[in-house]
Length: 538
Image 1 (tube, rainbow, N blue to C red):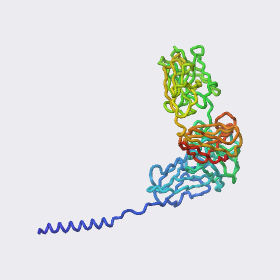
Image 2: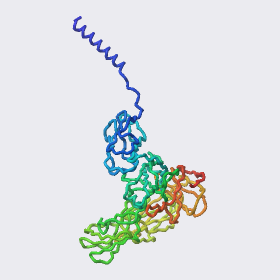
Image 3: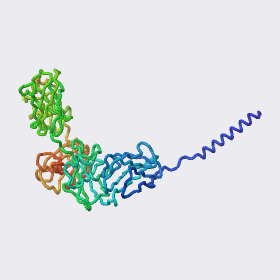
Image 4: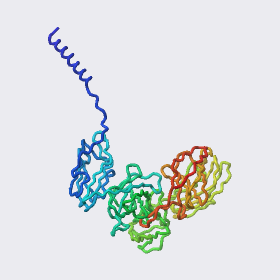
């Protein structure tokens, strides 16, 4: 055999053996790193007094990164402007805090990192590391704790801010709108607990805010607020509970503008009360137009309709509510107006107590019940009542319904007339009811009722109202004809007897009406009457 060929074969065998041995000995990777980073040291040292540094450096034993620092890192008292905290978007072995403000004298500052510090590779957190320093001779060490609840919803939102305002000679109720609090903390993760630590002895107002833009201030249009009725004095052993709620804004409208022919669009805030709204045409001089106002079902919008066309290029309009008096100028145009269109709701199945609706796109002004007939499956005429809901711009029709029945609704032309004299075309709708066996019911009783009346509401798990009833006495109640599913139950103490839940007000120091939620989810099954154990109200 050729010597070169023999050498090549031997070389190939040696290389193959080496590769096989190498594969056998290749490491498959060590165990997953489950160790969190370890704090090594800080400069200046943690719990330093007479602090004067402009930068803090906190060193760890491995590369770390900061996760969700905006919500996890709490600085109390807040620094204004906020310090620059690194790393941002990159891994390093230290955290650097660049302080850009003038710190208060004789003040203890606490920087709580929550669960933001994690190792770079596996994301193992170093939880609740806290860096504390004082610009004075000692570290304040007092603390206070408590719980947060939502005054209306069963579930409490995450990351609610808790603020303490010092009750000194400069304190006023407006501090929540314009001043930074003395101390701040958040609820821990998804829990409802909070702790305020490293506090100075004194008298404080405690406030909880669901701070939408993290600016340490209360924005009534977006934020929820909760407060204690009386100031607290620290030190204290008390544990506090605060209920957060959305304030009801005062009714106020925004600048009207032309939307369609003979129709102005008016945005608003608060609960619309048409008795509190005046629209006066100042120019050109004219008598008050024949008009109507309707409300959009999905947005905070009113529509102002006027019957006769306005021929000028612009109008001057005075808008008056209890809190405003504005004069606005609106450029007009000869646009096409909508023609009357009526939509029946629901179509198909209808619940036993559900009203039948005729919804219009232009403002209804008149109805004629004589042109409406409702027949059941035996062709027997069913009596009904009807009412125009002017603000919602719909005709509501109520009639008694039987299980497993069919109803034939018919409205002849002229049943409905709108502001412009337009009338509906013929409307036909077939409606059916389900058998009783498709429904379930809940039977329940209450204990420890403090006062009457009380409103009992059954909601979906998303908080949407399903059924309600009011008790002025007694403790037993039943919800019938319920679709199978899961529900929440809440009891409202209707203190002012107006038939619905009233929220609170910070400036009026008014708490929202008390709500108690049944602690468990209520499951309803078809063809089943479920008796629930008594609900002991707190």
